Length: 101
Image (cartoon, rainbow, N blue to C red):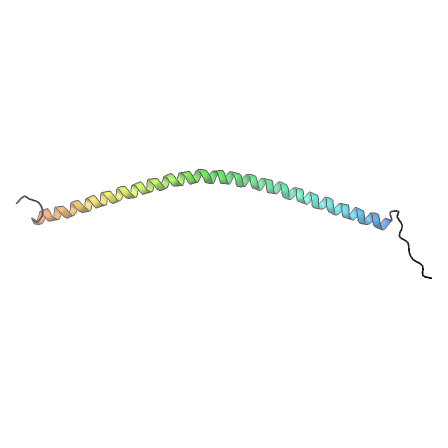
């Protein structure tokens, strides 16, 4: 006949040690998660501020693009008008252009 070892239903020192260790691990993990959550909330606040600043800057960049486009169109008009004026003056100087003789 073999003798079986019976496990006690009462807590033992080894069982309490295991429970304490598990409890400490859970507490450590929860505190670490709490720190990470606080960091995440801080980063989300910074991201929200950056998005708002970017939205304002996008409006200004759009306006700046309009100003630059207007300046380019004005410069083209000036250069085309000057180019046409220079060409007609040369023709007038050569006697080829114009109705006057």
